[in-house]
Length: 289
Ligand code: URA
Image (tube, rainbow, N blue to C red; front, side, top):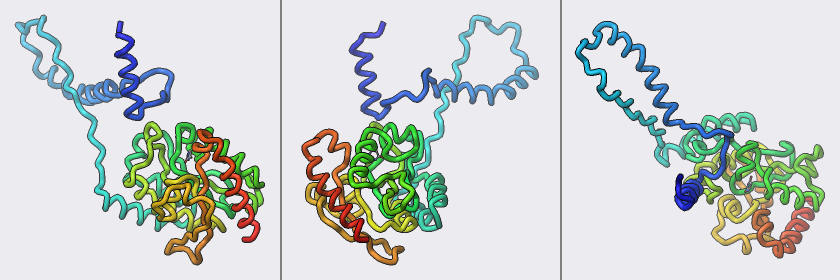
């Protein structure tokens, strides 16, 4: 029997490398499956050879069975940063609507997060909403459902929006919201997206903003605010203020603000007071637009 400490260490190692959830009831040995597939592919040829040249009668029957060669799956090709970014810019630019942008993301292989995520998390909410919220990155529940902000943070975000009369599911665009993230696939183990991952997803989120044409933009959490507003200051300095957001493809700048991330508010409920002020500031501005 394996020592409990070894089992714990192996589990911790999995967690540290981002393998933190099961996605099926039974474990599956993909390496064995791959080796079996390779062996099956090779089998007809081997059989033909065996018929043409049967082993000599004197072959020792006790010879050890030949070991199947260990065949490694081909390593995925990692495009260079520049090539991947150029690809992202072109795919995003070519998208004329939200369906096209989703298809472009499904085609884009430059961001390594895609390989470890279960699903693409693109958008959720009313596509005609006048308010667009952009968070940081999908978590476990978002990855499972393929929708942004549907886990515990999403529930708090919905409650925050509801407190000022906003609802991602509202039919009236004046009270509705559309929600997305600065990266579209879950980082393993919920780690912070790397600058490379964020940079590679940026052309897509910029194009999303151009296509949706919201009247106001809310960056949910510091990483989103830093990335979209081009700021280096932390969220405590960025919240409570209006900024101006514009991309070359937009006809006019729109007001943008940063909110504390609901995951942070779940850990630090005392900060909800400031978040409430920010929500009121958002509602006031929204009513003026
Ligand atoms: N946190 C985020 O920033 N985005 C999500 O979609 C979920 C949690």
